Amino acid sequence: EEAKKQASEAWKKPLDELKKAVEDEQRKQKALLSPKGYGLIRRIPPVLQKGSLRMGPAPRQIVEPLRQYLERHRSRLLPAAFSPVLGIERKAKVLPLTPEWSKENGLIDAAVRPVLEKMVKRPMAFVGVEGIRVYQAGASVMEHLDSVKNAVTVAMTIATSGSGANWPLLLSDPRSSGKGKNQPMQLPAGQMAMYEGARVAHGREGNLKDGELSVVFVQYRPKDGVDVDQLQSHIDKFLKFAASGPFFGNRKGKKEKGKFPGFPFPSINEL
Image (cartoon, rainbow, N blue to C red; front, side, top):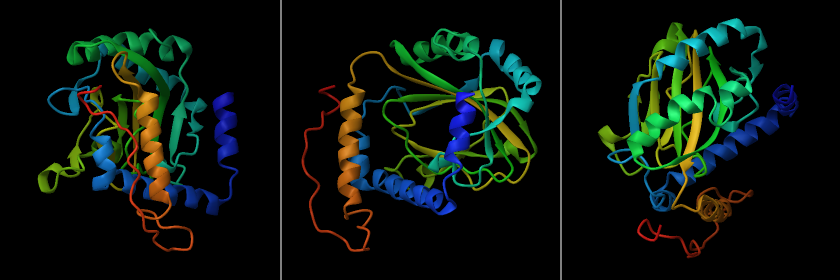
């Protein structure tokens, strides 16, 4: 009921206000993906060694039950709460999961976390799971970076139909060009991807033409060694400065001169 209320209230905003929110998010992501922005992002200590992406089969014990849960409760699908990253098409729905699925040490966490911890060789803290997100025809996902509080995202494809079966996941390292930029990845039903969403930009290619794509997202962060609140604070300071002119331009469209203030930002070694 709470999720339904939030979604309903979010979509009561005027269309112009929603468009502005999307445009603001696009400018924010552009600043983060600029050389100066990524100069900060790259200082986030890596979690997935030897690359920021891992792909493979999702745990069998939860994929099929989750698919059955989706089919059994499809009538309970709700419009996803407004997020600028998802655009204004309102083509993403969410099926809430019961606590036995979504809580810490619940069915999803108990199946996924051991796999992740074995891979990264360190204890990971469960952040949360949204539910089953269902992208429908016309849906889009802006290229973006996640909050550093969600260091690692585990995306599990539960079911697909139509073009949803081959709607590419785009991963983009801002340091790269050519082959390293915007590489499309297929994530068929029954497969999962683990990626560092705060370090590597990600999104979906274009709009979903037809059919559906149903995905469960689970977020984790390391239990030790990183003060995520401090990291996020530094990034927020950068975005506030960027919004004043050097990247976004002020509201009158003028560029304000200035140098990004040198606040203390810990190096990887210091962390």
